[in-house]
Image 1: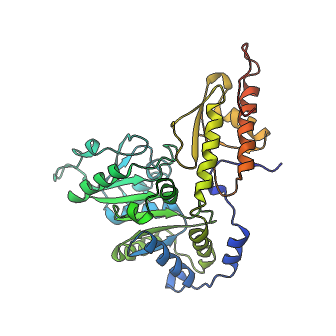
Image 2: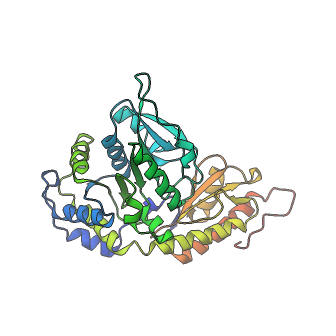
Length: 359
């Protein structure tokens, strides 16, 4: 069976044209600074974000961990939104790798409010950690691919800088925010000292992320990358995929957003399912299940029987993510599978079966 894979936008495979670009890439030893394709990618992404420099790394986790480490010393404190990727999905790297303390706050759809953090900077006292950094994530994965409100983000980052705090953006899906909002990547990035972007999610490259910042910061980042095992040799082969993605796969993210909207409509139309975050802005759809439909894991099993792969987030919540490898026709099929799976799950209920406009 050929599956419609909605588990993550990391499921994308390089297109034929991307593979050709990768096969033709000029390469060299990047640890020695001699890979021309990597240098080209770093220059391109730095210019796109209007930053002085960039460094190519194997993963978004490494990019974030390097970015945070640039701004902090062991024992310093980082302020984060409680649902963010850095805090929840990077294995406590802030503590394991850099010896940092964290203070987390519940945001509204991933966005911290200024009034939440105005009184959180620690006094200059030997009894306290030193508050050094504020991190945000855009788009915000666990908030359903939410685009952070630009005005609030600008206000919060300005406040942080005025008080001597650094700012870091986990922009793994920053280009989804760009396409959804119409706000350019450099306008988003200007409010942050460092920005991490990922090429292997919606952009469709097979490997890699980049960290962007000042030249001085990126020189230090290259040292930290080597320490963490991220120094690669003839990696221009994979950097070529990321370059191709930047040139050809940004504007098409709008298709993924439209497909996610169709999926959200199917959830709304299916009895027993409900959207977790209301409006779907980009390519991530979280939905909750009524208890009578069983567990999320069981529901994912029913979807799999119908050729659709989705991810159980917890007992009652499922995540589905649209991407380059899923066509409109496949999304329509996935919408039908939702209704069929819900009807199947509810077949032993005494009331009438679950109804869906997509069944």
